[in-house]
Amino acid sequence: MPTAKVVFATITGNNEDIADIISDNLEDQGFEIEQIEISQAEIEDFEEADICVICPYTYDEGALPDEGLDFYDDLKEDAQLDGKIYGVAGSGDTFYEGFYCTAVDDFSNAMKGANAIQGAPDLKINLAPDSDEDLAALDDFSKKLVETYQEQQK
Image 1: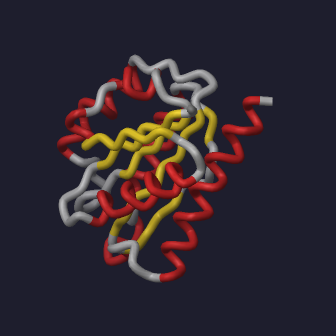
Image 2: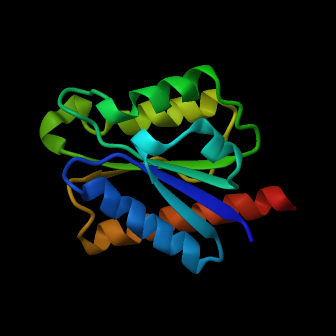
């Protein structure tokens, strides 16, 4: 059975909700899921997975989650995730305009730098993922990850 690791950071619960939705969607598509809070995650978790998902929040004016700084640094400096499929989806607040969800961009760039394959476009959700539009976007995100994984298996 293919596996997916879903790593999340949250203050308000929004990104845990995003991680839950993605995990449920991937599980419905036949993946064995492990969901990990970012301060408990290690790069090795991703090395063992077929699909790697990060759900970070962006704090204040573009700051990465404090509890995820070690994971981010390890990702940028030590990770070799050749062939791993990844996706990054996170919530933010459009109030911060130019800093809206910049942690999504930062983590996505770090995954690319580790030679992972982007399986779905980065997804940014304003605040809680509670609208029909948000749920549809998360469903599409999950489906694209699986489609990319399946294409790589051919």
